[in-house]
Structures are given as structure tokens and as C-alpha cells.
Image (cartoon, rainbow, N blue to C red):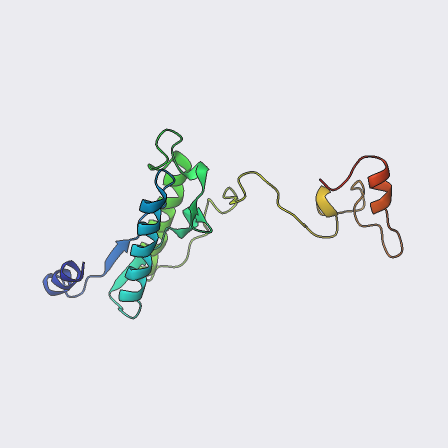
Length: 159
């Protein structure tokens, strides 16, 4: 890799090099770990190099494991359509950075949910039902009003 970057710098001194890190995969844990290791080594190698930009695809994974909806269900290696969208946005963002263009608002931001459809745990005052506005069922009711026990007695626990 160093030779390619060096040669590109010699042939095109005013150019910038973009290196894409490996995408996560779910078909083979060993291959996925090797891809993560390659990413870390590339980040370490080119950390202070001004003409080299790394396109990091870690947003296709969660805690080191590939997010299933970003991979094809058949082989768990190739990117799904949604994964390709995120991949392309990553490349577009790093190209914009390398060319010193203004940041774009990512279109996929509202669609990416690393919890795979789960809304997750605590979401503000409204407990598990949402934000807890004045019309919410069983949301925040104010000081001294504890309806947790009321939910439990009616079979509407927080589960």
C-alpha cells in the first residue's frame, strides 16, 4: 500500500489519495476481524499524512459486527441496496473532505438505525411509549405521581 501511495504522489504531486477501508461481513468472523485489523492498521499508518484520506465504513457495523440489513441475506458479504447507499455516502463525504468542499447533510441519517428496528431503551420522560407529551398514554405525569405500579397491575409492564 505504501508503494502505491508513494507512486501516486510522485506521478501526481498535487493529487490526494483516498483509501477505502474494508466493509464488515457476517459470513466469516475471522475475515471480519481481519478486515477490522486492516482498518486499524491503515488508520495508524496514515493518521498524520495530509495527502491520504481514509474512507471509513465502520458505520456499516455496530460494536464490530456487521449490521444485517446492510448486507445481502444470501451471502452476508456483499452489500445490500441500503448498504450500498451508506457506502456511497461515505465515499462522497470523504471526497468532499479531500476537495475541501462544504459538508453535505447525509440523506441516510434518518434511515440508519443500528438497533435493527428496536427503539431501544429509555427515550426521555415518556418511558417506553415515546416522548411523553401531554397526550401520551402513561408518559411523564409530574412530581409525586407514580403510575409504574398502575401499569404493572393492569398487565402493561415495561417489556
